[in-house]
Length: 337
Ligand SMILES: Nc1ncnc2c1ncn2[C@@H]1O[C@H](COP(=O)(O)OP(=O)(O)OP(=O)(O)O)[C@@H](O)[C@H]1O
Ligand SMILES: [Mg+2]
Image (cartoon, rainbow, N blue to C red; front, side):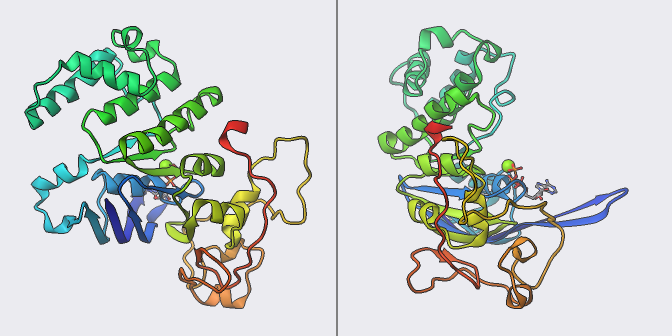
């Protein structure tokens, strides 16, 4: 459904006090998202997750690489016709509070795109209101109660469900969820994550799940692939369960060891790594990008750049000169948060 090849994106900004600032937001990201499949990207703040989501939905440009949607390489499509490819990919953003127009009721919010869609497809069966009600039911909301309301009359969880229903109005083939539950009350998160999983199995929608949270990636990305991204570069990737159960890259191990253990006050065991220090996103190095923060880095790591590869006995790909699978102390599932 989506094939991204070697996607790069560099931002250059100039501030009055900071001078020119160059950030390599994405460095050669490659992945394939099959129809009905799931790929999760995980990494800390600033690693390029949202930039990737925006590129895949046409909201952001990229300066290197190729993007193939439904077998069509987008650079070969005239710009005015690209929108029809990007329409198949809908993004659910982090903030359900600003995503919906506060002056419009939910039936208007869903009605407009539904009317446009009906015009596009020439489908006149069923009224727009019926279709809006159907979509609300699909996302677990009670249509009669919700349709006449304004966004501020709904909870954060309900709003995010409306955002998902609105994304579904255009019959997308891919949903990109960018930190889709991070601003939602903890008690409602599991319901939204379950809904995303459900849409994948029931409607065959592919899911690109972007998060900084291992537990949610594990829950939603079950059966799919997990890509760990560090400063715009994928440094480990493989089956979600494999990467979470036996991570080989020290960065992945640090991420996993940072997951709080909730059952009692379990002390960090010998397998746990030190927490990550502050990230300096500007320093470029010829070596491994993670080396300045890596507890295992040596001269080789600071001198040469490791590329994604496989070593014998390790299932997943990784970009590390010292791949050692380490068991990480219990990772909670989303439901236990
Ligand atoms: N429009 C922009 N102009 C300049 N720099 C940008 C722009 N958008 C993103 N960046 C930079 O690119 C890097 C990646 O940003 P991005 O928003 O993709 O990260 P993220 O992984 O989504 O982070 P978070 O978890 O905080 O949402 C960051 O260093 C950010 O400062
Ligand atoms: Mg982001």
